[in-house]
Each structure stands twice: as structure tokens, then as C-alpha cells.
Length: 347
Image (cartoon, rainbow, N blue to C red; front, side, top):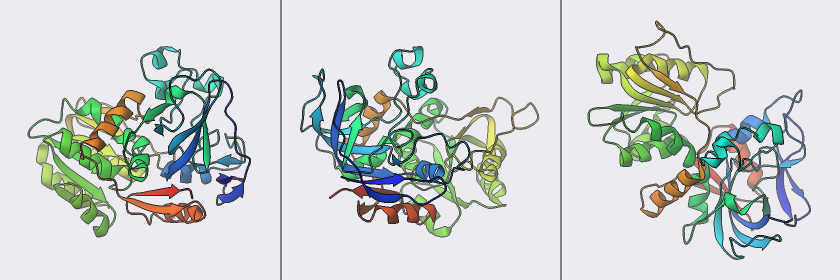
């Protein structure tokens, strides 16, 4: 079968012929119908060779949707032919966090070397994907695989980031979204549906700001050295109620802290370069500001996101590629030349 793999750290991925996997006891094999490319993939592709954390070669793709093709012995909870989405942040299933439904925060994942597909084990950028346990599959019914696959990360991650701030995002509140790309444009739609907040979107070009307005932002501000002043001109002395940074570089984190108001939330979602930090202290930001760095989301939240999609709330912008042309998806991703999400559709 064909697969898009990272073969060498710091190099472009390659389209390769690999063996089709077979499901062992308790496992499920999917015929992939759609796979999403994400900035997290680009982050992995650019990690230095020294200390590279994953075995290579490795098939990319932590966003996956497919149809159950085969089941291993002992699997009785899902039938062949079922269309499913893959819940990506796999955990041990039995620790305190996993038992509470928070597999994304599994306390034993590192110890047991449990990693998500495409981020440690072979992922969905292939004709077939091996899933370790049927509990990591969510039936999607008649949802479109291409429109659904980004929701497994680009929908789940912003939903998980936004939910804890919902009690604050009441009438008269302001939500700031930094970065209106793959995750940010979904976050704007969620905020419009779930809250009465005024939404201010920041990005680096007028084209991206126009896109943010199309998907629901009330106000837009260029993300540059004048961004704090631009947002403050809108929100005044009260500042923003919640700021969601889907970029995560130092300048955007500094902007978030510069516009948040007293008792507000700063939520850093974007990976950035992995080195940026938020300065927190009694004189570093307004009083009682909370800063969070959430990771992905829970399986139950993925079900909730898919329900929002069924209700017609979410319209994810996608650009599709065949598996043969999938390398171009990663080139466009690296060049920041995508409007929304890149989705690879195997033949």
C-alpha cells in the first residue's frame, strides 16, 4: 500500500510503498477515506535529528477517518463496514485521567510509550490505518469524511480549549482569536454558536482577516507590532475576557497577555517553535488572569464536535489532495499557503 512517511528528521516526507498491516488481537484495521495534514506534522518534520523522539520511518497523519476493513480477535464492539473517525490522543485506558475520560492527559502514556497515530506510530496518511483499540473509534454515520476528518483535531482541539472559558463568555464579553487558520477559523465558528461574545480575530494578512470575517469574526486586527493597541482600541480598559492563541510564538503570546483583561483567560493552543513562554506574575498581567496550555481533547468532546457538525454549525474550509499528490499538501502547509485544512483522500 502507499503511505506518506517521514524517513529522516529535517527532510520532506516521502511517498513510499509499505506493507499493509494486519490487525492483532483487540485491534482494528481501517480503510482510510480521508486524512488531515496539520501544523503539528510540520513541527515534527522540522525537529532536529538529535534527540528525535519517534522511530523512523513513520507514516504521518494524526487526523484520520475510515471504514472498518478488518477486526482482530476479541473485537465485538464495532462491525466491518462502519465509517468511523479516529480519536487520536491514545492513553492506557486505566489511569486516573483515562478513567475519567481524559485520555489526552494519560499519566502513563510516556512510561508505556503510548503515542498517537502519526506522532509515534504509523498514522492515517496511507491506504490503511491500524488502530490499537476500538474505543478510539467514533462512528460518523453519513457525515462526509473529507469535511469530518479535520474535526478530529482542528475541531476537537479548539472545542476543548474553549469549553472551560464558556462561563465567562457571557453577554458583553469579548473573545480574541489569534490565528484564523486551520484551528482558528473553526474556533471562531464555535464561539459564534456557543457564546454571545464579541469576537476579534487577529492574523498577519488582510486576506486571512477577510476569511476570519467570513466565518464569523465581528472585528479584525492585523497581528503585528501594533496588535495590542489595535485590540485595546476595541475592548478599552476592560480588556478581553478570553484570548485563544492558535499560533504560540512569543510575539502572539505577548499579544495575548497584552490584551487580556482582569480575571480573563489566556489559552495558548498553538505549538509555535516550542520555546515560547507566558510571563505570569502579580505585575506581569491584570489581576487573576488564568493561563492554560490545553492539549487536544477528550473522546466525549469529539462526539460533541461531530454533533455540532451534524447540526450544520461547522463549515471547515478544506483543500483536498490525492495520496499521490499528498506531498504537495505538506509543502503548502509549510509555506502557510492553505485556506483552512489540507485533506488527503486515498484513491
